[in-house]
Image 1: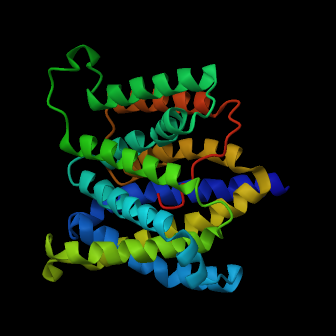
Image 2: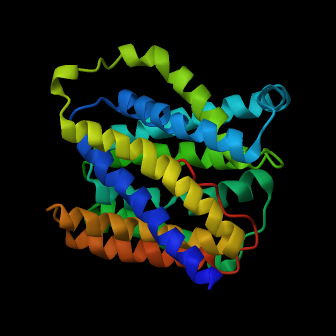
Image 3: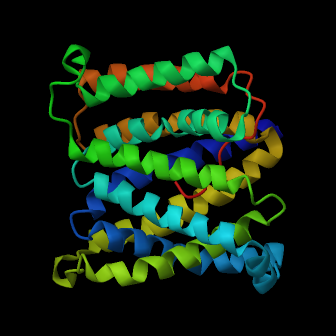
Amino acid sequence: MMKYKAWFFLIFCNLFWAGNMIFGKYVMYEYPAIWTAFLRWLIALIFLIPIAQFIEKPAWLQIWKKHFVVILLLSVTVAIYTVLTYESLQYTSSTNGALINSLTPATIMLFSLMFHKEKITTFQVIGIITSFIGVLIVLTKGNLLQLFHIEYNKGDMIMILAVLAWTMYSLLGKKTKGMPTATLIAITSFIAVIIMLPFLFIQPLQINKITVLGIEGMLYLGIFPSVGSFILWNKSIKIVGAGIAGISMNLIPIFTAILALLLGQGLGTSQVIGGIIVIGGMLLTSMKQKQAAPKPELT
């Protein structure tokens, strides 16, 4: 019964993250990328700080003094990842963004092999290659033979940079063992918000363009994928473990595609085929994986 409960949590957890791509796309029409990232984590902090305080009761100052270098680096990568994600959605579809973002577990595995000398299985190697081919199909619209002769979507390229930023966050996150999870997310989010403050003037917010739908979309980004998914994810891994929970992240591009269709956005054949290949590759990388899954709380 507990496992069914965990999968119920994971379904909604990934549904909220898929919604981040969909609502993020709509919000970009009214908010610049830097403002979207800034306001998202500012809203999330309203909930994250009390959750950390009342559940984990951390010694905030002591944690900062002991881990300030790692926390600062994590905060920078969080800010970069979030801004790049929303910047990419100005130029590419939410479906493409979700598919490219699903490469993240594979890139984390690859970089862990390079920098941490972690073991990688044959299934994982095949999975990484398969997922990469799937993403190439999406990027080239199925025309792999013209790989070096086409004009790539600017947003797709920016999303790849976002994936690399999140990969760095995940690698750095391995140095935070023993730190309370909610506290870590709250602190890094708080510092990320401060880091983004000076850059708000680069892309001024035009208040007259903001609609009720834009405000509702921003509230969604700050509450559901930032706080809701975070809570559901952590409840789930306590029941089924991080490895099995990590497999559920393959639901994100599927949910994104479904939500896109419900909202009237079209899907191309290359997106469908590429998406199936990406998901198949990610399932392969999840097989016999013994190391801890990446931390996706900030997706």
